Image (cartoon, rainbow, N blue to C red):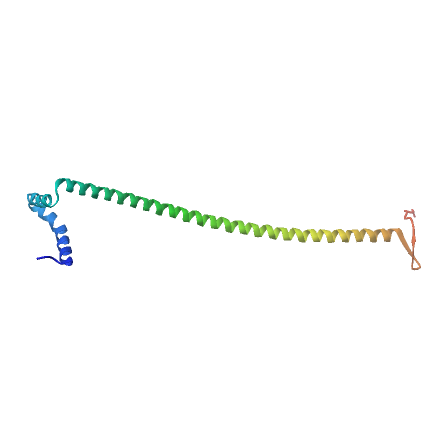
Length: 149
């Protein structure tokens, strides 16, 4: 009588868990199982299947190693990206500081230009005051000299 898929699965699980215990109790039973497997799979076929299983296991281990390496590389890249973002933020802050400094220098240049204009006006006023003496509301050029008293 054929088994359902669920029943086959239950038998497989039972065998996987109980068969090792049976082998511990009765090591000769392993020979019986080996005979059944040998009848179902000729020796060459059995050896080929074992080789294929071994190859699959090795391939699986390589894939897992690559995945681990990929995960590690991804973490390093994420750290690098975070550091680069931080560096970009610092550069932007530096650029803003430079712009502020340039604005301050422009203001200082305007202030110096205003001071220069003020000095020129003061110099012109000094020349006017030094070169002229007010006499009855008129300006008469006079040479200044020190007269001893």
